[in-house]
Amino acid sequence: MSNSDQIQPVLFDKLDIRGVLVGLEASYQQVLELHDYPPLLQRVLGEMMAAVSLLSATLKFEGRLILQAAGEGAVQLLMAECNHQQDLRAIARYEGDIPQDLAFNELLVNGRLAITIEPAQGRRYQGVVPLEGETLARCIENYFSQSEQLPTQVHLVADGQRAAGFLLQVMPAAGTAEQDWSHISQLGATLKSEELLTLDNETLLYRLFHEEECRLFEPRTLRFHCDCSRERCGNALQFMTREELLAIVEEEGSVGVSCQFCNEHHSFDETDILSMFSDSANVPRSDLLH
Ligand SMILES: [Zn+2]
Image 1 (tube, protein in one colour):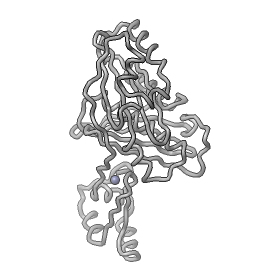
Image 2 (cartoon, helix red, strand yellow):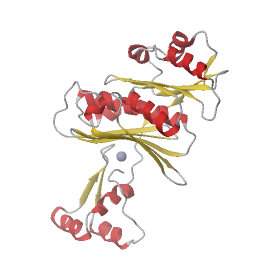
Image 3 (cartoon, rainbow, N blue to C red):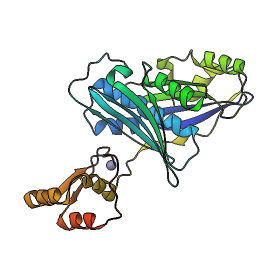
Image 4 (cartoon, protein in one colour):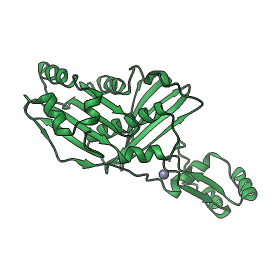
């Protein structure tokens, strides 16, 4: 497959076109082991993880990149995150049975795809597009053409064991000739999912682009890692009132919160609850994920 748990940039030297290859195996399996997802969601979540890894490689930033697909219907949320250290985590929220044959945009009715950059310092940026493509890869291509005006081709595949992705893109601010992009993207379009899952990066590039001058850069290692903290899990509790929380403590001894990404459990006693509400600077977060 594409090299396991690695992300590897590709550059077409004379063309101002770049690429990224990603392969996930252990990191993907660790995410699946934490939850009992239906097979279709296992595959879609693998594609989400591959996609967020590809996107993180196209951006120079310190902080976290969040890819979110939200909608109504059986699946409410698919979310994958990657930070600048290539720590990955992902989650799906769904209800009931998930039919096996739904397209991506049928899983999330009236869906939206959001790409959020949360820099370690500075302002958060979010771009949102409707989920119109039949696959996640098409939706991300739409995102780049609508939000960034960057011609982009995306391939994603996952089989419940391994996930892989390949992105081709015109370099931002480059005056890439249309015919160069057309030529490279036509070659890229011949890539089959099976090849993306089974070939190593060098073989894959040779098969697609052996007549082009294209270079692979040093790979970077990806891993599953959740950076949740007791403090951030505690923030989720502030959607309840002090009295509600104290009532739970009285009844059960403590209030428990499990991180939805890694299942880490944190419990809060009466002293914790009181200090949580005495700190007026502690503003509740706008989302329940932490
Ligand atoms: Zn966690």
